[in-house]
Length: 403
Image 1 (cartoon, one colour):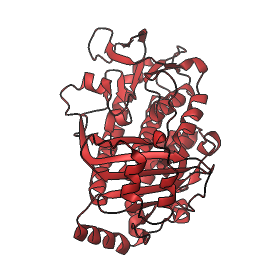
Image 2: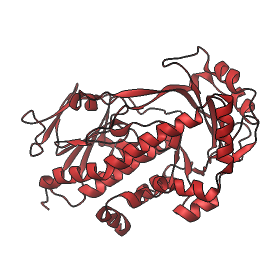
Image 3: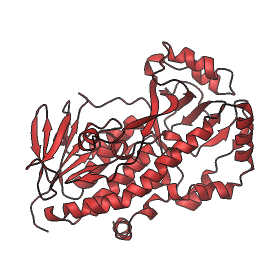
Image 4: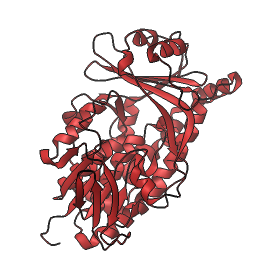
């Protein structure tokens, strides 16, 4: 490989984009991150990192528990609105099977920790990437891409589109793609301050067309979220009152947690996924990852985890390549990631339909099936999620283990 430093431009400073930037920076790349928001977002929600995401971070030498500083074990049990357990989480069994239990982390802390792993001048806020084309105006992989922003142009050896679920770069390069599809559910998320009693364990409660999740964080704060079947665009004027109306009679500690909610700190988003898979995750020297590539509903808890996997697999495949080898590495990335992530996108949508059942008979049958399924069967069904780095090409996994 020549001694010429390779340059990557990353569109988007979310978890996936920052993970890619950190992984490439540690491999000697010059990295520029363009983020359309004018400043780092104070993201008011948590994220549960499954074992596959933790293994991916380990492979690039990023210690979540030390870097983010507020990680807590968070295997989710399932309950009914009356408090009865459908399935209890077993963090010990998950650790034995996968090497670690899931960890709950505040998103803001994770973003700050990833940002700290980059040079200060690497991230440009208030700079939206508007288009990416090769120098000759085609998708020719032999040509270095030109990145256009309102602040000027960048020339790079590689461009990573981590520009989110509404990805302008996806729309630019795949104009015929059908785009996003509404799942039928809306979701609320917030993090409660550490000024009251915290639940002892993470749990998700399934009702009739409604769900409520509680995830304690290590620093005493509590990540709470809720979903409900609702028309697309439904936005109640007072989210706290809406949540109390829907979930205020559910089991403890849900009512007490709802009383502590600050309405101004509640995020509400309709849940979408891609209506169809992208034909591939790269064009020329432009490559997509995370929601920009394979937006999925959060029902498996894998949206952020798959973005982290994407970033790490991409960095491993690019490791040791010279500029001429980048197109081949991107083709290998598409081959490694397309089938896995699209299968999870479809599986997540199906899981959401089951969790969102509203008819009493269907709900009763669902709950009975959850309770009757042996734990060993449930764990086996999670293997392809939680052993994520086992599902990448052998040469990539070998590089991971060698580092």
